[in-house]
Amino acid sequence: MRRAPRTPRDPDLERQKIADRTLETWIDDGSVRDEARHAANRASAVTPESPPQRRPPKPLDPEVTAELADAVGKQRGARLAERLAQASEALDRERYQEARRLAGAIVKEAPDVAAAHEVHGLASYRLGLFKPAVRSLEAGFDLRPDPYVMPVIADCYRALGRWKSVDRVWREIREMSPSQEVLAEGRIVAAGALADQGDLRGALAVMEPATKRPKVVRDHHLRQYYVLGDLYDRVGDPIAARRWFGAVAEVDPEFADVDQRLRTLGR
Image (cartoon, rainbow, N blue to C red):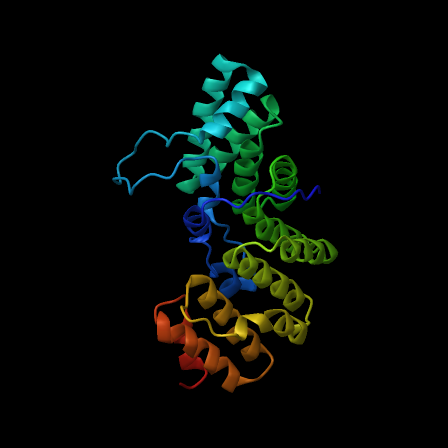
């Protein structure tokens, strides 16, 4: 992949993009395959909270609209912009098949528009279609590098058992010096890949930077604490496992299944 430098985006938007990432499938089967739905907001404008009834799609970022117009002409570009907004909205509402179908058609017609590749890749990822997901996400990244998709790319490679590719993307994440949220997600995926291969001590070594307590504990810290607790439990160190699960419960006692994990460990 081409890894060109990029000017950081609005940090508030960056935090929103990563906010919905969870540990659901780490709990289920040792994976972290719940991508940040709000990464789709790189193609959509951020709007205030909307009512629950069906609403028109949020307007596209003007930059993406301009890219579509350049690619296929102003009139056709306006139509594709409407469809891409629909695809982004479908992704946000977990209608992944619809999002993938709409975005895939746009990719065929306007292959140089990064946002279309990204929506197609994220929808494929959520459907468990990891090979097409990584192809689309890599293509979108080459067109417009965005560190927020890199942990998802790494997790696609993890799902495919391509361990060297996971290592490569994790190295590239660190070299980009992204936000702490992105770094945390990449670290979780890298540790999960090692755990998948039976190297629990190696996974703990990857997670070691997450043991430094911050002044303010945020969601990405809790996710890392949970992973630390899980790994220590798996290596047979219940004291350390209780400490990290306890650190999660102290801030958010309803986080994932942390209460159950603590009961199992005898707290």
